[in-house]
Image (cartoon, rainbow over all chains, first blue to last red; front, side, top):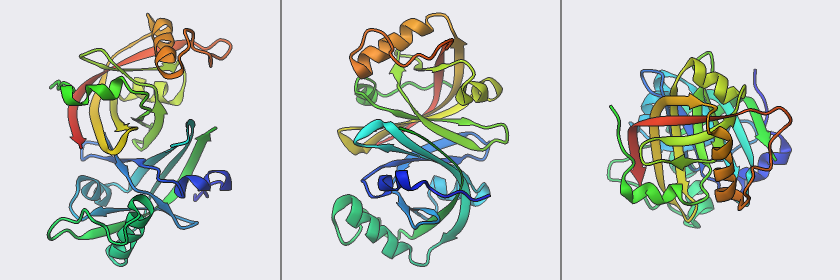
Length: 132
Length: 132
């Protein structure tokens, strides 16, 4: 069952929000880290490097939870629970540059490590809850 | 195996940080919501109301992940993975008032609903990771 992000909360994806992304470790326990975040009108998108813990976790278990707190009002937030719809390296470099523009005002993502391969995740929202 | 919060990151518990708290739903999928947060030198503390989703989840599965992003530098953060060491209603009212003082500058927690019973959770840190 897919759900859409309410229009009322779409502005959160235009702000420089660091989303809390939870994935599941091999023993099923949760791991949560901040990520840059994006929305294409259907999927919630984030970008990581191949082989990172979240990348390994998501190839084993596709389920995620994402939390976006409004930086202008911490009592306003959106939670998205869902699953990986697509994992792709195609377009991942362009996408991390797009995020670098949004979050840092830079045309090229400046934190790339030698040999790093970027990977783009598209998350299908299944449950959306919100406050504020 | 207990771990302690590095001194370098203890300031995050003095700031008005909204921690991302992940608990696990009955099917093992993650749920993440913002919470007020506290640290007593040994356990990470938060406070919720009896019967909320996170309260139900934690009585079934004690495992949590917490993310604290520095509001003054979003590239500095702390992740704490661990488990419930104690769930108690004793002292929970005093504790939510302490958090209301920290986050809102109010002596008494102002958001209490009729009939609401507060519950205090103490989390034993088991894995700590950080950046920045």
